[in-house]
Length: 335
Image (cartoon, rainbow, N blue to C red):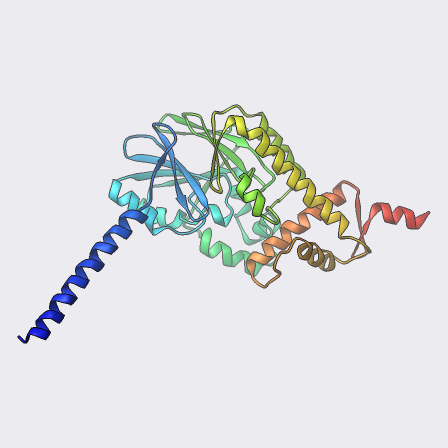
């Protein structure tokens, strides 16, 4: 073999070794980490969310929600550590909390899925999804149902008259925290870690979120006050925050203040009688929300309209003959 050819071959071999080692280092660095909170409870980070888990035994655990995106790294971690997921308890069934359900079902065919009965009922049919989850058409609801809630995925609805789930003698307490969704619950692990789902959002998310999703404003505000009254040492907020009790009062106060601000803006943009489409377009423009096509925009528009439904329930806005009026201006015009 010529010297130049030998040198080229050696160079390629060294380059291959470097690439393999770099990939090994990258994989080691980006392997999913388990963050311990207690001896039995911890969480993994998936996308923009923390997914808590509680160990029933040394290698069997229960997850609280399954994350906002499908995660190959989660499946790899379960394989490498020989962990088996026995159940998933959902705080609610929005698509950003159920994304790994089907992957987990494929890996563990006997796995069980739980949520509150109201949440389970919300995904029972496309019509239920339109009524409870903000889908504007049956086609959009069917599209989401096919991807996230197919028939083979059965989520057990828990009667909140007895708000607990027992798995192998271990009790997971459910706390009704409706408002963000129709049957949203907090989940307390047997060792006292309170998983709040989206009942409140973290300070970081609050600072950047333009319009936190709401199914019912007043119920959500009441649930926030309930969170304030809880007495646990550690709280896991789904979208990437773990907080101690001492900080929860401020976080709740800031969440409530944000919602009052959004309601005030919703009222202020109604400067004249407007159709639903007109006022929503103006409201979202005022909040600097990019108005685009697609399913995500449907959900955002529903969340925006929820604020107007609340203002109508308060009697501050009147909806008449397809137009929205501010009550104070309507009264002035009639006098």
